[in-house]
Length: 68
Image 1 (tube, one colour):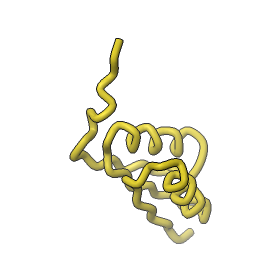
Image 2 (tube, helix red, strand yellow):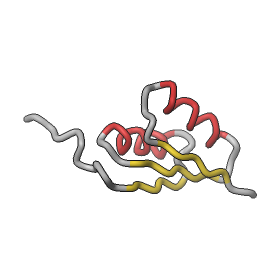
Image 3 (cartoon, one colour):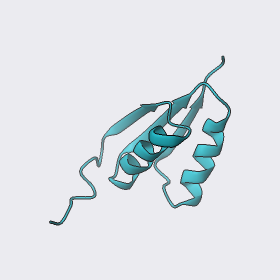
Image 4 (cartoon, rainbow, N blue to C red):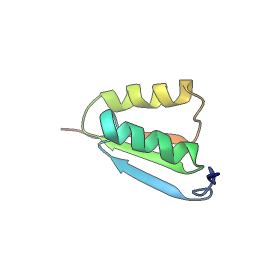
């Protein structure tokens, strides 16, 4: 079955804990399906996650680091 890979076009997805693991995978999938993604995490690796998503071709991404 063909999937509509733009089903989140013109939508915003906020992913908490999205700097690694399942959260990062969820953020990447939302971006692949057209969403603008805001990833938050309380660790510095959120900046690495942003770089990874940009390098993989997902430009619909915003990072937000939080203080501990």
